[in-house]
Amino acid sequence: DADVTQTPRNRITKTGKRIMLECSQTKGHDRMYWYRQDPGLGLRLIYYSFDVKDINKGEISDGYSVSRQAQAKFSLSLESAIPNQTALYFCATSDLGTAKPSGRQFFGPGTRLTVL
Amino acid sequence: KQEVTQIPAALSVPEGENLVLNCSFTDSAIYNLQWFRQDPGKGLTSLLLIQSSQREQTSGRLNASLDKSSGRSTLYIAASQPGDSATYLCAVHGSGNTGKLIFGQGTTLQVKP
Image (cartoon, rainbow over all chains, first blue to last red; front, side):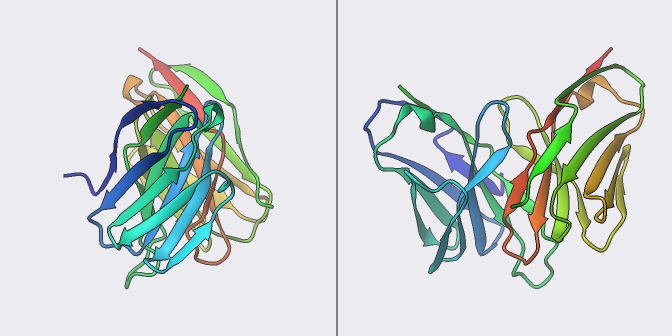
Protein backbone atom coordinates (compact mmCIF):
# COMPACT_ATOMS: atom_id res chain seq x y z
CA ASP A 1 0.00 0.00 0.00
CA ALA A 2 1.10 3.53 -0.72
CA ASP A 3 2.50 5.47 2.21
CA VAL A 4 0.71 8.71 1.26
CA THR A 5 -2.73 8.49 -0.29
CA GLN A 6 -5.04 11.17 -1.63
CA THR A 7 -8.75 11.11 -2.38
CA PRO A 8 -10.31 11.79 -4.75
CA ARG A 9 -7.77 11.35 -7.56
CA ASN A 10 -9.85 13.41 -9.96
CA ARG A 11 -12.66 15.86 -9.34
CA ILE A 12 -14.66 18.17 -11.56
CA THR A 13 -16.78 20.77 -9.84
CA LYS A 14 -18.54 24.05 -10.50
CA THR A 15 -17.72 27.57 -9.42
CA GLY A 16 -18.95 28.33 -5.91
CA LYS A 17 -19.03 24.73 -4.69
CA ARG A 18 -17.26 23.62 -1.52
CA ILE A 19 -14.65 20.94 -2.11
CA MET A 20 -12.57 18.87 0.30
CA LEU A 21 -9.43 17.00 -0.69
CA GLU A 22 -8.21 14.37 1.73
CA CYS A 23 -4.77 13.04 2.52
CA SER A 24 -3.79 10.09 4.66
CA GLN A 25 -0.34 8.78 5.53
CA THR A 26 1.02 5.66 7.18
CA LYS A 27 4.60 6.90 7.58
CA GLY A 28 4.06 8.10 11.13
CA HIS A 29 5.32 11.60 10.31
CA ASP A 30 4.09 14.63 12.22
CA ARG A 31 4.74 17.09 9.41
CA MET A 32 2.36 17.32 6.46
CA TYR A 33 2.08 19.72 3.53
CA TRP A 34 -0.32 20.72 0.76
CA TYR A 35 1.05 21.98 -2.58
CA ARG A 36 -0.56 22.91 -5.85
CA GLN A 37 1.00 22.55 -9.28
CA ASP A 38 -0.01 24.55 -12.33
CA PRO A 39 1.12 23.83 -15.91
CA GLY A 40 4.57 25.25 -16.57
CA LEU A 41 5.10 26.10 -12.92
CA GLY A 42 6.68 24.28 -10.07
CA LEU A 43 4.82 23.31 -6.94
CA ARG A 44 3.74 26.03 -4.52
CA LEU A 45 3.03 25.53 -0.84
CA ILE A 46 -0.53 26.18 0.35
CA TYR A 47 -0.51 25.08 4.01
CA TYR A 48 1.64 22.98 6.28
CA SER A 49 1.22 21.37 9.67
CA PHE A 50 3.80 20.34 12.26
CA ASP A 51 1.27 18.44 14.33
CA VAL A 52 -2.46 18.33 15.05
CA LYS A 53 -2.40 21.67 16.85
CA ASP A 54 0.14 23.49 14.70
CA ILE A 55 -1.05 24.67 11.28
CA ASN A 56 0.65 27.34 9.20
CA LYS A 57 -0.07 29.26 6.03
CA GLY A 58 2.16 28.74 3.04
CA GLU A 59 2.89 30.86 0.03
CA ILE A 60 -0.61 30.81 -1.49
CA SER A 61 -3.18 30.13 1.26
CA ASP A 62 -5.89 32.58 0.18
CA GLY A 63 -9.09 30.76 -0.78
CA TYR A 64 -8.06 27.57 1.03
CA SER A 65 -8.44 26.15 4.52
CA VAL A 66 -7.12 22.97 6.13
CA SER A 67 -7.95 20.58 8.92
CA ARG A 68 -5.57 18.20 10.68
CA GLN A 69 -7.91 15.59 12.07
CA ALA A 70 -5.19 13.28 13.32
CA GLN A 71 -1.49 12.70 12.87
CA ALA A 72 -2.30 10.63 9.79
CA LYS A 73 -4.92 12.87 8.17
CA PHE A 74 -4.67 16.35 6.66
CA SER A 75 -7.53 17.76 4.58
CA LEU A 76 -7.58 20.74 2.24
CA SER A 77 -10.83 22.62 1.62
CA LEU A 78 -11.86 25.10 -1.02
CA GLU A 79 -14.78 26.93 0.58
CA SER A 80 -16.06 28.42 -2.68
CA ALA A 81 -14.18 27.05 -5.66
CA ILE A 82 -13.19 29.33 -8.52
CA PRO A 83 -11.78 28.43 -11.97
CA ASN A 84 -8.24 29.62 -11.20
CA GLN A 85 -8.05 26.95 -8.50
CA THR A 86 -7.98 24.36 -11.28
CA ALA A 87 -4.70 22.57 -10.66
CA LEU A 88 -2.98 19.39 -9.56
CA TYR A 89 -2.88 19.19 -5.75
CA PHE A 90 -0.27 17.22 -3.84
CA CYS A 91 -0.03 16.20 -0.22
CA ALA A 92 3.35 15.40 1.29
CA THR A 93 4.93 14.34 4.56
CA SER A 94 8.39 15.00 5.94
CA ASP A 95 10.49 13.02 8.37
CA LEU A 96 11.79 16.20 10.01
CA GLY A 97 11.10 16.10 13.71
CA THR A 98 11.56 12.34 13.88
CA ALA A 99 14.41 10.57 15.64
CA LYS A 100 16.48 10.24 12.47
CA PRO A 101 15.42 12.98 10.07
CA SER A 102 16.74 13.03 6.53
CA GLY A 103 14.69 16.05 5.44
CA ARG A 104 13.23 14.00 2.62
CA GLN A 105 9.64 14.64 1.57
CA PHE A 106 7.23 11.94 0.46
CA PHE A 107 4.45 12.83 -1.94
CA GLY A 108 1.04 11.42 -2.60
CA PRO A 109 -0.16 10.67 -6.14
CA GLY A 110 -2.01 13.96 -6.49
CA THR A 111 -5.60 15.10 -7.03
CA ARG A 112 -6.50 16.67 -10.33
CA LEU A 113 -9.14 19.33 -9.66
CA THR A 114 -11.08 21.12 -12.38
CA VAL A 115 -13.35 24.03 -11.51
CA LEU A 116 -15.77 24.96 -14.27
CA LYS B 1 12.80 35.53 -0.99
CA GLN B 2 14.21 32.25 -2.28
CA GLU B 3 13.76 31.70 -6.00
CA VAL B 4 14.63 28.49 -7.84
CA THR B 5 15.25 28.35 -11.57
CA GLN B 6 15.78 25.32 -13.78
CA ILE B 7 17.43 25.41 -17.18
CA PRO B 8 16.61 24.19 -19.75
CA ALA B 9 12.83 23.95 -19.57
CA ALA B 10 12.86 21.06 -22.04
CA LEU B 11 15.52 18.76 -23.41
CA SER B 12 15.48 16.06 -26.07
CA VAL B 13 18.42 13.69 -26.47
CA PRO B 14 19.14 10.40 -28.20
CA GLU B 15 19.41 7.29 -26.08
CA GLY B 16 22.83 6.72 -24.56
CA GLU B 17 23.83 10.33 -24.11
CA ASN B 18 25.10 11.70 -20.84
CA LEU B 19 23.25 14.85 -19.83
CA VAL B 20 23.18 17.58 -17.22
CA LEU B 21 20.17 19.36 -15.77
CA ASN B 22 20.75 22.66 -14.02
CA CYS B 23 19.15 24.25 -10.97
CA SER B 24 20.01 27.65 -9.50
CA PHE B 25 18.77 29.30 -6.32
CA THR B 26 19.10 32.85 -5.02
CA ASP B 27 19.62 32.34 -1.28
CA SER B 28 22.56 30.15 -0.29
CA ALA B 29 21.25 29.61 3.26
CA ILE B 30 19.62 26.26 2.62
CA TYR B 31 18.89 23.18 4.71
CA ASN B 32 18.97 20.73 1.82
CA LEU B 33 18.19 20.36 -1.87
CA GLN B 34 16.18 17.57 -3.44
CA TRP B 35 15.76 16.34 -6.98
CA PHE B 36 12.43 14.75 -7.90
CA ARG B 37 11.12 12.92 -10.91
CA GLN B 38 7.54 13.38 -12.11
CA ASP B 39 5.93 11.24 -14.78
CA PRO B 40 2.94 12.71 -16.66
CA GLY B 41 -0.14 12.87 -14.43
CA LYS B 42 1.72 11.22 -11.58
CA GLY B 43 3.13 12.18 -8.21
CA LEU B 44 6.69 13.08 -7.35
CA THR B 45 9.38 10.51 -6.70
CA SER B 46 12.39 11.62 -4.69
CA LEU B 47 15.61 10.86 -6.56
CA LEU B 48 18.40 12.42 -4.54
CA LEU B 49 18.68 14.58 -1.46
CA ILE B 50 21.80 16.63 -0.73
CA GLN B 51 22.24 18.07 2.73
CA SER B 52 23.68 21.58 2.97
CA SER B 53 26.97 20.17 4.27
CA GLN B 54 27.37 17.77 1.32
CA ARG B 55 28.81 18.36 -2.13
CA GLU B 56 27.22 15.50 -4.04
CA GLN B 57 25.06 12.40 -3.90
CA THR B 58 24.94 9.43 -6.23
CA SER B 59 22.30 6.82 -6.97
CA GLY B 60 22.92 4.44 -9.84
CA ARG B 61 23.25 6.45 -13.04
CA LEU B 62 22.32 9.68 -11.27
CA ASN B 63 24.69 12.11 -9.64
CA ALA B 64 23.66 15.38 -8.06
CA SER B 65 26.08 18.08 -7.01
CA LEU B 66 25.62 21.12 -4.82
CA ASP B 67 27.59 24.36 -4.74
CA LYS B 68 25.95 26.56 -2.12
CA SER B 69 28.30 29.50 -2.58
CA SER B 70 27.30 29.88 -6.21
CA GLY B 71 23.68 28.84 -5.65
CA ARG B 72 23.81 25.93 -8.07
CA SER B 73 23.00 22.26 -8.29
CA THR B 74 23.32 19.91 -11.22
CA LEU B 75 21.75 16.54 -11.89
CA TYR B 76 23.91 14.35 -14.09
CA ILE B 77 22.27 11.38 -15.84
CA ALA B 78 24.67 8.89 -17.36
CA ALA B 79 23.85 6.72 -20.38
CA SER B 80 20.30 8.01 -20.72
CA GLN B 81 17.48 5.59 -21.53
CA PRO B 82 13.95 6.12 -22.89
CA GLY B 83 12.65 5.23 -19.44
CA ASP B 84 14.35 8.34 -18.09
CA SER B 85 11.84 10.48 -19.99
CA ALA B 86 10.01 12.56 -17.38
CA THR B 87 9.98 15.98 -15.76
CA TYR B 88 12.75 16.58 -13.25
CA LEU B 89 12.11 19.04 -10.45
CA CYS B 90 14.62 20.69 -8.18
CA ALA B 91 13.41 21.79 -4.73
CA VAL B 92 15.25 23.84 -2.14
CA HIS B 93 14.57 23.63 1.57
CA GLY B 94 15.48 26.97 3.11
CA SER B 95 17.29 27.49 6.38
CA GLY B 96 15.62 26.13 9.48
CA ASN B 97 13.83 22.81 9.55
CA THR B 98 10.28 23.67 8.59
CA GLY B 99 10.25 21.30 5.66
CA LYS B 100 8.97 24.04 3.34
CA LEU B 101 10.21 23.42 -0.18
CA ILE B 102 10.63 25.97 -2.95
CA PHE B 103 10.41 24.31 -6.34
CA GLY B 104 11.83 25.16 -9.72
CA GLN B 105 9.62 24.96 -12.79
CA GLY B 106 11.17 21.68 -13.88
CA THR B 107 13.02 20.33 -16.91
CA THR B 108 11.05 18.01 -19.18
CA LEU B 109 13.37 15.38 -20.60
CA GLN B 110 12.68 13.23 -23.63
CA VAL B 111 15.11 10.41 -24.43
CA LYS B 112 14.58 9.09 -27.94
CA PRO B 113 15.30 5.43 -28.77
